[in-house]
Structure formats: structure tokens, C-alpha cells
Image (cartoon, rainbow, N blue to C red; front, side, top):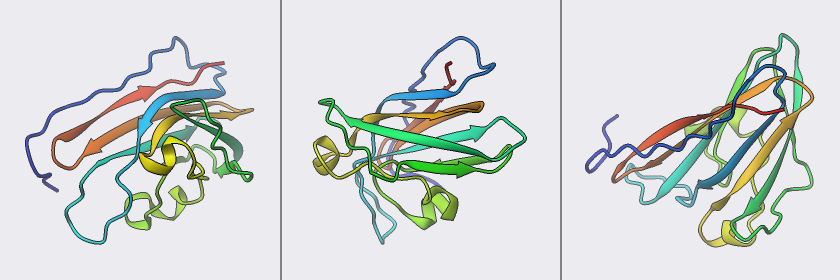
Length: 154
């Protein structure tokens, strides 16, 4: 699908050495302030976070959110389940079955407080007792998008 405007790649890469026995992914910053739209034209930045289970067993992950001012925006129910070797992609602030699929909607979103209430910007940490790895991609429908790996750390 073609995007409006000039495509400019914006890369966000978190570089951390090693993936063996990794069980924590830190996304230090994302901007998911576009909200939801029913029409084909979108107006703002949206983020998609992806987490992959590297183990051949079902795992439980927990997620915590903070806004740009370090205000905790973690919901009470902050865990989700990943099937063996499965990947889930989700938007951390808004939900859309078209963009995320049913699996992505199972990951708890940040609470609408602080900068999440107005702009949808902040960061999060995903942890598990098992091996996980992640990726972040951001896109603006007018200027394109970019992505980067977020290797897990121990």
C-alpha cells in the first residue's frame, strides 16, 4: 500500500549485545499518538511493537509503561501470553483489529494518563522468565516510516 507524501526512513535502533538467555526488552521511546481512523487518510505518528517468543513453550510476558515524564501508566492487568515461537505485534496506546489483528489486541495498552493522554508518547519494558526479542517500527502516513530491532537483554 502506497503512503502519501515523500518516504523518509526514520530508524530507531536499540543496540544491546547478546540475545542468549535474554528476558527483557526496553523500548525507551515511542510515539503512538495517531489514534484510530475509519477512513484511508491518517494524520499522525503510530508505533508498532513486536515481541517474539524464542522458546518452544508457551510463555507469559509482563509489560510496564511510563510516559516521557516518568509517570507510570501501567494497567492493573499487565500480562499477556505468547504461544511457542510466536510473535505478536501491537500498538501500545490505541487498538485496531485491522492493524494489529486479534493477537495484538491481547497485549495491554498504556493507561491514558500523562503524555499518553494527549500525545501517545512514552516508553515501555517487556519482561518474561523466558527468552524474547523485540522490534519497533514507527510510521507517519505523510512521511513514511522506519523500524529497528530491540534485542532483549538479561
